[in-house]
Length: 178
Image (spheres, rainbow, N blue to C red):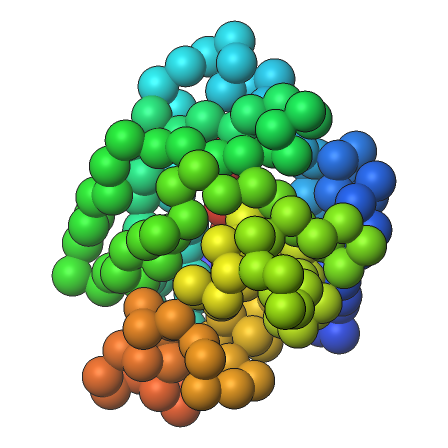
C-alpha cells in the first residue's frame, strides 16, 4: 500500500525555478521545464500520466488518472508550450481530461505570465506554475487549487467536481512521463 502525505509546501515558484527544477525532501520534486523539453525532444511519443491519490476511508485510497499520448514540451523560446495528440481514460477512477483546452498552452508562473489572459495572471491566482490558457482549468501543481478551487471559475474537470469525491482528502499528486 502506498502512503502519501501532504505537508505545507508551495509550488508558487519563480520562472527560473520551474525552468531549472527544484526539490524539497526526496518526494517533492519538479525536474524542470528544460529537462522535460530535453526528454520529449530526444524521446518522442512520450505518455504523460497524472495521478491523484485520494483518501476514501480510514484505510483506503483511490488513484485517479489521466493519460496523454505523444506528450511534448517545447523549448524556452516557446515558453515550454505543451502539445499532445490524445487523452486516454486509463481506468474507472479517471481525473477526466484535465488538460482539455490546454494543448498548445505556454507555461506561466507568478513572475512570467504567458497564459494569454490580459486581465489576470492565472499562475498568480492559483498560486502555482502550470500550463494555463486563460482560466480554462486549475493547476495540478497547486494541489489545493486543483482539488479545491478558490473560486467558481474552476474548470469543469477538477477533482472536486467528481460525484461522490467532493469532500475526500487529497494525499498526493504525481506527474510522470514514460
